Figure (tube, rainbow, N blue to C red):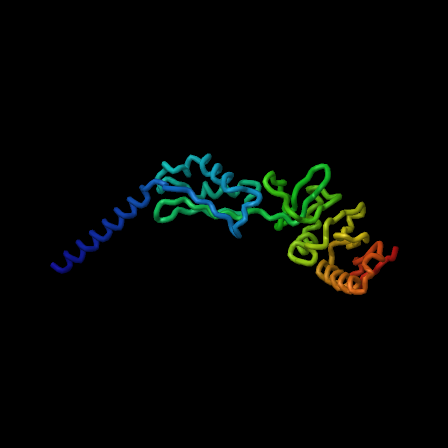
Length: 234
C-alpha cells in the first residue's frame, strides 16, 4: 500500500512539474529589453537593436516562448556590423532580454575609403551616430591597416599615448611615423617591432624634455633603434 502511495505521489509531482513547464513555455513574450555592456550605445542604438528584433518574426511579442529560437535571434544581432557580441535570453516573467557588446575602434583610417580598425584588429565601418576619438591612420587601406594593430592597440590602452598621439602615418617603405599633439616634431617609429619598448622610451624622453623645456627644439624624434631615442634639432 505504501509503495502505491509513493508511486502515485511521484506521478503527481511529475505531472505538476510538466504542467508548470508547459505553461511557462506557452506564455507569450511580454516585453523586449536591450542593455549595453558598460552602458555604451555609441555606434548602435537601442532603437536599432529593437528594430532588428522586431524584424525577426520569431522574436515578436505574440510568439510562444517554446517557439522562440534564441540562437537565431543571437545570430541576427551578431551579424550586425557594429555589434561585437550579443547574448539573448528569456526571463521567467516572459521578458526577452538582449545584452549587447559593441565593437570598439582603436584607429580611424582616412583615405580613398574611410573606416575604423577595431580592438580585435578587424575593419569596422564608420558610424552615423558617433565619431570615435582615436588616432587618424594615414596611408593605410583595408589590407595594410591590420599591420598597425599592435601599435594602435598599445596607444588605446595607454592614457599618456591616447592624449598625445594624434595620427599614425604609413610611409612608402611601410615604416610608421606619428604626429604628437601640439608639437612640431615627427615621431619616427620604424617597423612594428618592440612596441612597448619604443613607446616607454618615448614617454620617458617626452617627460624629461618637457621638464627641461626642450620639446620645441626638435624636428624629429626617432624611436626605431629600440634601446635609445635619437633626436634631430631644428
